[in-house]
Image (cartoon, rainbow, N blue to C red; front, top):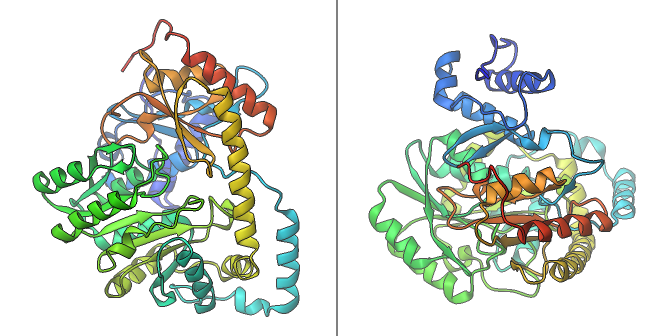
Length: 453
């Protein structure tokens, strides 16, 4: 089949959106099929006479919409998740949702109280890019409970952790810089690296996450290193958590090389109160988080805590990317924080995740699984001779969506594994069915046609 290229772009909308819209239309019309390869970025940019950054933004938007998937070393493809399900119901173990808990009563009560005792105009007008002071104070209290003595005047509110990361990279890097990341990392970092023109350099990991020896080696041999991004708590996707000794070793290296770090903290810690990297390295540590994984994904309230000298640069990027967080959303979240509802919802989700993890452990018994008991995703290392991509493809054909290691790898993944998310299966029965399918598949040998990498 001839590789797809868009028709002339709609001049009334931004070009990156026009490319993404044409891609969506081609999929709807059947001109593009699930699994079909898309043009490489530079080739498409040349054909359309647009910048490489424009195509990167278009592909990133299409990826967020679930239209395409990227495979390390192979390119971009129409998402296989768009293919018809083999039977009535796909079991989705790919989307990293928090464990489901009832929320209707809490939301109704908060909205009713908000409507009764707030001046609507104050929540529907423009606000400061940093966020209202009362909301920042409440989030600073939340952050203090997670291992960082945050001050409200060093907090910037954001539309989720993704925008917080976008702000940090936009303020601290320039095109051509090198960004150090864990060898398996949050996929959104690749989209932002493409947008900002950054080089990603993977750093090896072990069961405690980032390896200090590998970090030091990267700092010695790489040129143009500007920043480290990592997840010290419940790393996505591997669930690794850095011990106190590991954090101290990482910070000692960063301080020696005077390298800033952006740490993401979005999952439940359970009883752990180890200090954040930013607490150990306050002069160059940036701490970002959100309420999505612990309270409610739809709130889209994130935050970035940074050293005071960096605030002006960070606020400039905040204004350029989103101007501000909605005061209405921040007020709702603030009321939940002040009344203890956010903490109660987090506790309920933690307990629900524990039950899901216990159930998964029983079904997956005998397989090589790592997990954090307070959070609803786990990491399954696959037996030989499976590759992660072939395993995910075969699972999809049997009605179960999982995420292969390739989706998280900056270079070729070090070993075959898949991430399983327990919070979005849809029902307890669907979760059991999906996990049993994973077990059956893991104990089989790959069929003919596998290993096409």
